Image (cartoon, rainbow over all chains, first blue to last red; front, side, top):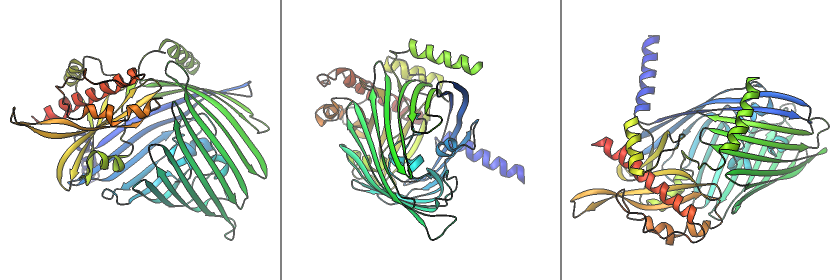
Length: 297
Length: 193
C-alpha cells in the first residue's frame, strides 16, 4: 500500500514535470565574514532547494504550491529564520479576484513586501522595528486597478523578538504605477506574556526609479514598545556590470540603533559574487565585512 | 581551506569576467495587471516552464545566430485564456541593458495569413516590466515598442528605429524579443507538429 502511494506521488510528480508544471531550482550562499577587522568566519549562510508546482484547470492557473528546503551552518539563527524556509499554497482566484495564501511566507509590511532581501548583505529595518519577517498563517491578497492589498493573520512563530509578535495581524495597501510604488502598512500583535498589551506598528514605504538609480525608503512608527525609525536603500550601477547598493537606517526604541552599509555585486550566469561592508552602533560587532558567493542551480 | 580557495576563485572570476553580458530566466512579475494591457479580454493564464533538448538548443542558436547563455536552461511561457479558449501567449526574458537588466514581456497572438492560408504567430504587444535605463521613458514608449507589433519569427528586425542615445539597450530589447519568438517556435509550435 505504501509503495503504491509512493508510486502514485512519483508518477504525479514526473508527469507534472513532463507538462511543465513543476519548476525546481536552488542556490548556495557561502560567506566569509570578518567582524571588527579581526575575527574571521566562513559560513554556509544558506543552501536552498526550491520546488514550485502549478496546477491549472481549463480556465488557467488555480493552485500554486511552493516549498523551500533549506540548510545552513547556523540554522537556528535570526538571519536564517528571516530569510529561509518559505512553504505555502496559493489558491488563485480568477483575474481581479482575491488570492489566498496559506503556509509560511513574508508578512505584508512595508518594504518586506516589495524588496527582496533574501541575499542582501545589508541590515534591514524590519529586524529592529518588527522583529519578524516570515510567519505561519493565512493571507488574502490581490489588486484593484492600481491598488494592491494584502491582509495576513499569522501565528507569531519564528519571531526573533519574543515575547512580542504573538498572533500578528498585518495589512498593507499599495499603489503601483510606472512612476512610483508606495504603500501604507499596519501591524498589530499581542504580547504572549501579557494579553493586555498590543504592539502596534504603522509603516510607509516607497520605491521610486530615478534611473539609473532605484531609491527605496521606509518609515515606521509604533507603540508598546514605543519606537520610530526609517531606512533608505539606494541601488546604483557602478561600472562594467557591477551593481552597487547603499543603505542606512535608524531605529529609536529605548536606545537608538543606527546602521549603514555598502554592497557591491556582480552576477555572472550561475555565479554571483558580492562584497559588503556594514557599520552599526552596537557596542560589539560594530563593523562587518562580508565576501559572498552565490551559486545558482 | 576549500572555502578560502573558493573565495580566491571568486575574486579572480570577478576580475576576468567584467565585460561578459548576462541574460537569464525571468519571471512575469505582474501577470494579473499586465494581462489587461496585453490581452484585454483575458480571464486567466496557465504557467508552463519550457526546457529544451540538445538538438532543440542547436536549432534555437542557429536561428538566433548566437549562443544561449549558460543560465538559460529554461523559459517561462504563459498561455492566455478567455474562459476556456486560448487567445494568446506571453513569454518573458531578462537581458542586459546599458545600466542593468531589462525585463521584457512579449504578448503573442495568432493571425490568419490570407496568402499562406494558415495561422501564424505574431507579436501583439511588448512591455518592459523592469529596467534602470536613463532613457527608460523612450524605451517604454509606444513609438519604440510599437514597432514590434505584427512581427513574426521570420520578420526582419533591422528596420526598427533605435532609441537615440540608448542604442545598446534598444538592440538588447530587439535581441530579447527575437529570442522569445524563436524559443516559442522551437519549444512550443514545432513540438505540437
